[in-house]
Image 1 (cartoon, helix red, strand yellow):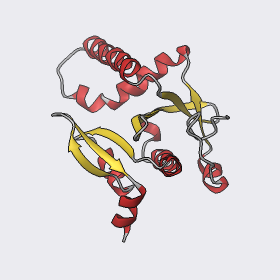
Image 2 (cartoon, rainbow, N blue to C red; image 1 turned 45 degrees about the horizontal axis):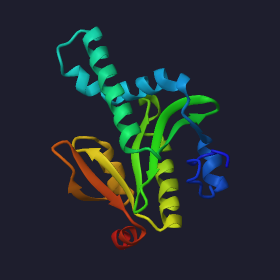
Image 3 (cartoon, rainbow, N blue to C red; image 1 turned 135 degrees about the vertical axis):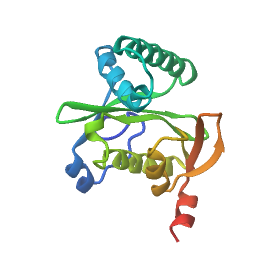
Image 4 (cartoon, rainbow, N blue to C red; image 1 turned 45 degrees about the vertical axis):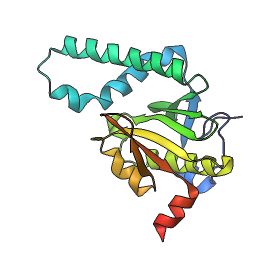
Length: 184
């Protein structure tokens, strides 16, 4: 299966109209992508790093440690996940990690570099994942930090908070049935 716009085995048909507008492609993460993946991760923590009085070296060391811990955590707890680089015309813009957990489709991570945020790419990818969730007859689940501004996007796309996971994250779920109820 070609990874044009969707995860490897998670590959619904893509409407030609939407794919031609954004020209988004997903490719499998390779070892040489680690530097790029770190830069995407670090960009998601930039506001937080601006609040601490650390040197650039200290910030970088902290972010590197956190990135490596996240990478290890994902490999242990999400062994069947698909890790993708989001690209357009060969230019890497972000990352997307998804795992079919059997009883739900989990968006583990979706992140874009700052210059690509707010351009419709995240919305497009989530809409495609919603189509895949419908095809699989599974809810689409994600976990997001309470203070993350992306919560507004997820709510607009029909995700509903279901629970607090811990003191940092809440879980949000989208199902075709809930989405239809909310849109009436």
